[in-house]
Amino acid sequence: MLEEQKQPGQFPWVEVWKAVRQTFHYWMETETHVYAFSVAANVLLSFFPFLVVICSLAKLVFPVAVVKGAMEIALSDYFPSEMIGPMVASLLSFKRGSLEAMSILLLLFTANGVFEPLEVALNKVFGITTNRSYFRNQVVSMGLIFVCGGLLTFSTVLTALNQQYLQQTLGTGPVTTFMVDFFFRIIAVPITVFTLYLVYKFLPNGDVPNNRAVPAAIVIGLLLEVLKYTIIATWPWFGEKLNREYAGFRHSVAIVLWSFLAAMLLLAGAEWAARRKGPTVTS
Image 1 (cartoon, helix red, strand yellow):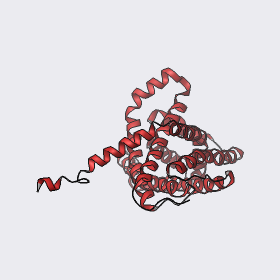
Image 2 (image 1 turned 90 degrees about the vertical axis):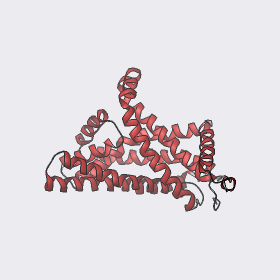
Image 3 (image 1 turned 90 degrees about the horizontal axis):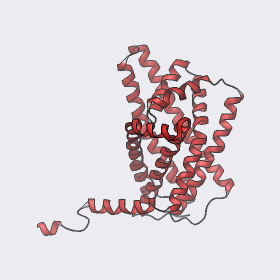
Image 4 (image 1 turned 180 degrees about the vertical axis):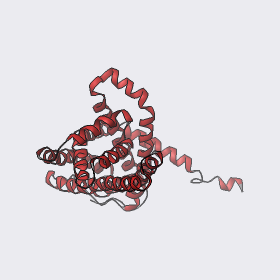
């Protein structure tokens, strides 16, 4: 009986190790690094304009104090406290007008740059030989920008609403802060997973089956959560190192490096999904 139980497939950890080893091989490819760094550079360009747009839209509905609290909670999910204060102060200092319109235009242009290398990378991973034309890529990218940006804006607005309600009901204090923070994290994870699903499903120039896109989105969404907490936990050491080597540019360098790691995870999820058994990807 014991010998019968030792059959291939009975030990999932062996299969997991094989999958992880293949992913590491993929990470070691030069093209993978080129794609990830290209995505990271465009994230840096689009990051602050995107925050300006979200903050400006939120200020149309909520008082500045509520928007400030919601943005601090949202940013604390990604950045250490040292970076949050200057960011929020800069965001709240902008006034509606031409600067806001310029931020929207810059966001659309640079965010498209995020999806261009991603499409090429995902096409190669899923075995799709033809990339979209530049115009078609811009159309698809624009759609993903509006949907993904809308989801993130929605989560920020919900956080602001929840914070406003709890402050009116319970007042300000550690309990209110904890509940608002907990609420944001509860809705942030599903939104991240759904955003990843949209990228895996619709960005490649072909039909990626749901049984490949959904598991990859869930796994990478959870791994991105682990990455966020790892970054925050290691910031005292990492931030000091960046301060010594980059001084005033340390925050920009941190955003590029963190975006690079997130892009590597996203690409790893696609590479893993492409190896899963199931219907093939069709172009």
